[in-house]
Image 1 (tube, rainbow, N blue to C red):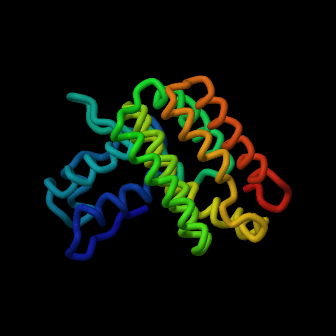
Image 2: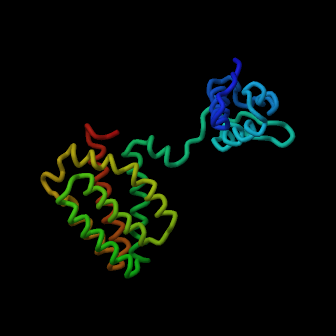
Image 3: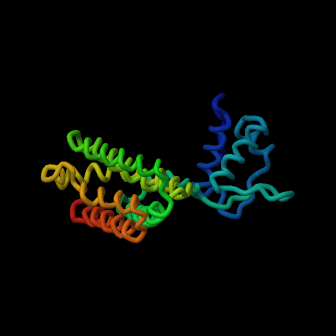
Amino acid sequence: MPLGALRPSPLVEQAAERLREQITAGHWPVGTRLPGETTLAKELGVGRSTVREALRALAGAGLVQPRQGAGVFVTATRPVEDWPTRLRRASVTDVYEVRMLVEVQAARLAALRRTDTDIDAMREALAGRRAAADGDDAGFVDADIRLHSTVVAAAHNPVLTDLFEEFAPALRQGLIDLLDLLALRDKDPRTGEESHAALVAAVEAGDAEEAARLASAELEGTLQLLLSPGHAG
């Protein structure tokens, strides 16, 4: 199947996309050596430097791999998804299960490592969550996530913090939908107030096991609601 000449711009992106289409369609199976840069450049109607940049982009996506002195070979027919993309594609319950692993350990570490500044941030976030009860579900979920983020930050582990920041956007809409579907805040506008206050208190008191237990119980309760018929996804 001929590649066909490209439109003027942006050439590198177009070249990479055209080559990607050939690979994903199976025109060049895994293990196949791609035609040389000169051949590809002629077929695509671009310069060798453009082809070189396009191949570099495909290598970054995990589709091809250059081998010194041998050429460029196809290594996969589907691009490797980055972490944010995989989170967006995952079900909210799958993401939440992993969030539990992160936050329970974070709560334990937070109780051992929290500083006065961390405690102030948690108290402020708890008050913010309480105040957000008078607003809509989206604002309440945002305030809830901010509170959890202060607990994670108090663990003083940048990897845990980064993981939580990746999870939060993937969870946000699912939690908003949960509140709406089950009308949880119709019954209690500050739903979860006591458990969150207790978690902050345990972290402040330096009780690592109690903080972990409370975080686990609170998150497990939400997970079970997410898994309930009509919501699990």
